[in-house]
Length: 84
Image (cartoon, rainbow, N blue to C red):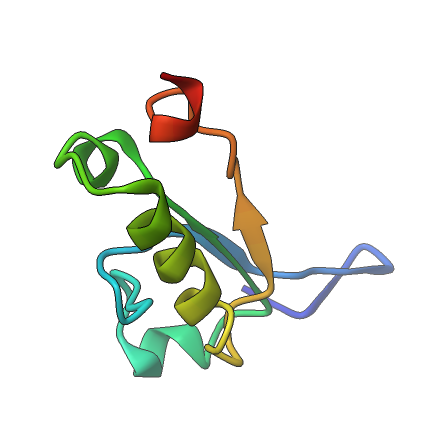
């Protein structure tokens, strides 16, 4: 897709899954570097594993070390232990 379309600047991105305590996301570095915006989120399959709130916090903090990740998504997932 073009970076300019109908006099508008187009930004391309995705929402990626934060997978582990190292903050890895489910998108290769090569694909990350081609996107303008990446949102990193914890989704139910990871949250339902049953880790502690401290581990989920570490996952978010480590994900923020990734220079290709720009936004954290829905950090208030109702299945996180803080809501129990």
